[in-house]
Image (tube, rainbow, N blue to C red; front, side, top):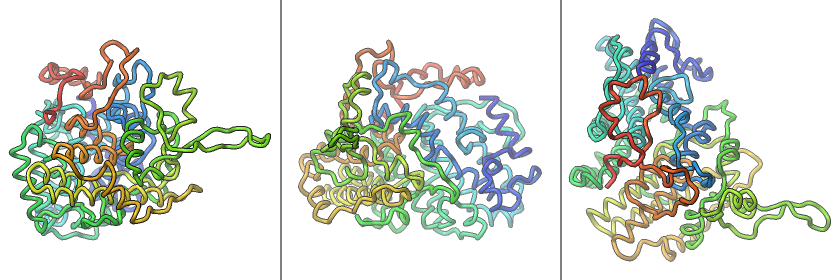
Length: 534
């Protein structure tokens, strides 16, 4: 860890940051690489231009599809004997990419510390003009830092990047995870309040490659992220969560959310918080899926979607098929129906039978060069609202939010399918009757006892997160225990028969920050619960 902090700390002097690594950003800002005068707009753009947020090969191939996606079953499991064993090298890279720039992430913590230092050196007038940039950067940092807590628990945070901030070389302590979440939630409340009365600037809008300086969206994003974190802690600190959440939901004027205007047929590109690919991006995820796993997942397709005749199926999956002899010629013959390989298949069965089962949709996922990085969507927010209403308010209000969330999830995934620019079929949006039947007359319909309704909320959120938001899917699965998934255990390496409940700290971190690691070594097991797990 010390090595990482020193590397991050020299950012102010050398500014070898993501802004300097990505040429398409360089030309947009005044002196982003000036070694003597790093500027807030350039650093902010560098924070946003994060390949751990964007839909990029490395994050999908080495992290999402190998760890959280497997542990949440939103990614198909290649049923080897080490499938539940964490990759230390890949998790080390993810860890490093939070603390320092130059890898596959932007190093958001390092860049934010550099921004703090620069901001503190400005005149009072310049601080007033650029405070909006620093506030937005704090929201960006919190979103990524909360994920680090969700993955590992206690993390170095308050003292990390010390040299960047105050020229102090120091190995950072581990901050306690619940205290970090408490701080994140409070900071998001302050940010949401700030953005409501702040004024955007041309400089901020130019630097803001996420929301183009739109303070209404920044307000909604801060509030919605706060809602997510409050509901995340609600199983272990219900009193705190309930009070704050009901205040938010009861006062949408002061606490607007990313909810798509509570309209099912909303426009995700307008309402959701999505990191769009840069204009010169030619990246897609096909290699990540081909090398990792692009097969449909058993429980999601066979147990949840097919019995409900879910209208998202055509944009989530392709039926796939085999090349067969037809009239003496080789011809690709599509499978007659959508179905997923059983999760219990052995590796040999998977390798021999995969063509008989569905795969991820080519237009929506595999070859979609316009696929955005997803930070938060209206469907997730309305499912959070539905849970809060069902637990602490009116079940009628919960049903309203739930029904809207289902319709918004359909709109979201058809939107992703239709923005692809390749030679792939763009599916026709389902009819109102089709969607109505699914929402009102299927096993997804909001009926039965309260516990059944909550199960439907949790299940639909898990489906909506899917392969692209696997980290959030794993967090919610650990928080709720829903859906009830079966994980093959036969033939697995001893000690790794089931998925973990957290990631182990990377080996390099234990070595380089060994003194501070001793304070958390007792928690560093793969079965230790994150504080928000019941």
